Structure formats: C-alpha cells, structure tokens
Image 1 (spheres, rainbow, N blue to C red):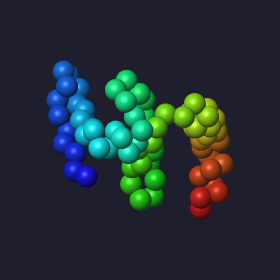
Image 2 (cartoon, one colour):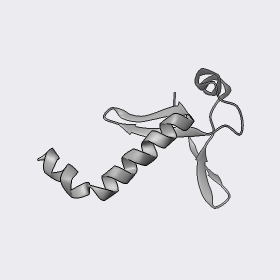
Image 3 (cartoon, rainbow, N blue to C red):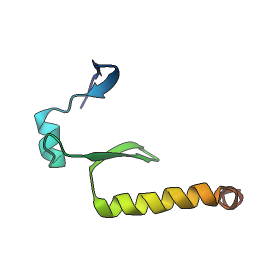
Image 4 (cartoon, one colour):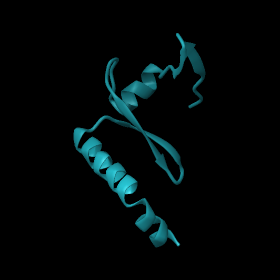
Length: 73
C-alpha cells in the first residue's frame, strides 16, 4: 500500500486509509508504534506492556552502550 507524506501545519504526516485502519484495528485518536525491524518499519497498535518493555530496553541501551558494543564485535 503506497502512502503519501503530507504537510500538516508545520509538521508532516501520513493519512492512513480506512482499509489500513481496519486491518490494524485502529480508530481516530488511537496511538500506534513504528518499530524498526531488519525488514523495515512495522506499524503496530499501542500496547502498554510493549511500551514498558521498550522503555526498559532503551534505558539498558543508554546505560550499557559500551557493553553492547563489545558484545556486537
């Protein structure tokens, strides 16, 4: 599905067609996540449990960046 980036005030946004909203089970006002994966970007519904897990992961990545860098070598 091809989406177009449009100007919205001083920002930019993407209009999600009804069909995509239905597939994601989203409504106007809902929140969603854009997750970076090895295959690209994945859009998913907001999940409070996932949000908490992502916050912990980001904290670990900030605090232990040097350790993660060594493990990646």
